[in-house]
Picture 1 (tube, helix red, strand yellow):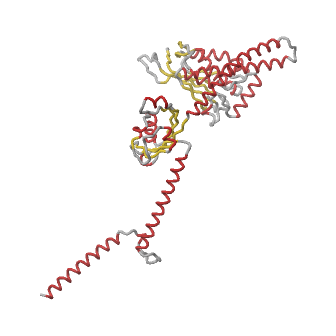
Picture 2 (cartoon, helix red, strand yellow):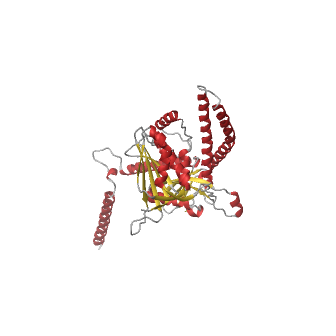
Picture 3 (cartoon, rainbow, N blue to C red):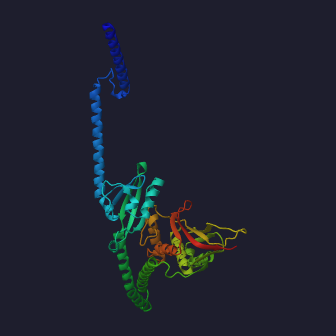
Length: 437
C-alpha cells in the first residue's frame, strides 16, 4: 500500500512538471526574435535585455512628451489663435489667443466639449467640415458675432473680422489657425477716410491751378509754351487721380448708388469704345477682332460698362506690340434654351479680352485689381514708354474701378495669362444677358 501511494505521488509530480515545461516552452516561443539570445552574438540575458528595451521605450516616450509640450508652449505664446477638434468636432485644445477671439470663457483646459456648444459660428463649423472632407488646407474670412448670455454683454462685445485657416490632421482631427483682422480693417478704413477727405480738399485748388495755366497757355510764345503745356498735363493727371479716387471710394461705399440699369447691346457698345480708342490703336497698327453673338443684351448701366471696356482695351493697346490684334470673345454660359434654340431667359455672359503683350507676372496676378498696385517691371516699362510718347499717364486706379463696377453689376472679373498669345487675359462674367437671333 505504501509503495502504491509513493508511485501515485511520483506520477502526479512528473505530470505536473511536464505540464509546466510545455507551458514554459510556449511562453518562450512568443518572445520576439530580437530578444532571444543568438549563439553567435554576445547578448544580454533575457531579463536584463527586456529591462533595457523597456527603459529605451520610456525614454522615447519622455522625449515625445517633451516635444509635444514645446509645441504647446509655442502655440500658447503665438500671436495668432489656434484650436484643435477631433473627428466629432469636440474641442480638444486651444491657446489663449483663440480663447480671447472666440470668447471661450466657459471652456477650461482638459475639458472635451462640442465646439458648436462653445462657439456659435456657422462659418467656423463649415470651414472645419470642408477641411476634413477635402483633406486640404481651407481658408475663410467672415464677421464673427460673439454669443453673449446677457443683453448688457451684447452691447459691450463688438463683432470681429476673423480669417481662419483649417489644416487636416490624422484620425479626422482638424487644426484651425485664427487671425483677428479687425484692427487692420479699422486702420484701412481710417486711411481711406483720410485720403477721401484729402481728395475732396484738393479738387478746388487743382481746378483753380488749371484755370491759371490755361490763361498762361495763350499768352506765352514758343518755345517757352512747352513748359506750360507740360504743367497742364501734370495738373490734368492730378485732377484725374483725385476724381478716380473719389469715384472708387464711392463705389466701394455704395456700389449701386449710381447704377442706371437699362438694356445694353454688348457688341455695339464695344464698337463705340473702339472708335474712341482707334486713333491711339491706329498709330501702332493694332486691330480689334470680335468673335461671338452679334445681338447680346445685358441689363446694365451703359456708361459704367463703357468705362470698363474703355479701361481694359486701353491697357491692351498700351501693352500690345505694334501690328498685333486684340481679341474680344463673348459667349453665353448657363443656358436655358427653348425648342427653337433662342435664348430668351436670363443667363450669364462671359467676355474674354486677350492681347499679345508681355502678360502678367505670376506673383502679380492676385493683386492686379488692387489700388495703386505696381506689378512686373516689364509691364511698367511698356507703360512708361507709352506714357512718354502719348502723354497718357495712368492713375493706378483704373483696374480697381473696373473691378468695383463689375461687382456692382453682380458679376466677377479675373486676370490671367493666355496660354497661346502669352499676353494678358481678362475674363468678365456678367449676369442677366438676353440674346435674340
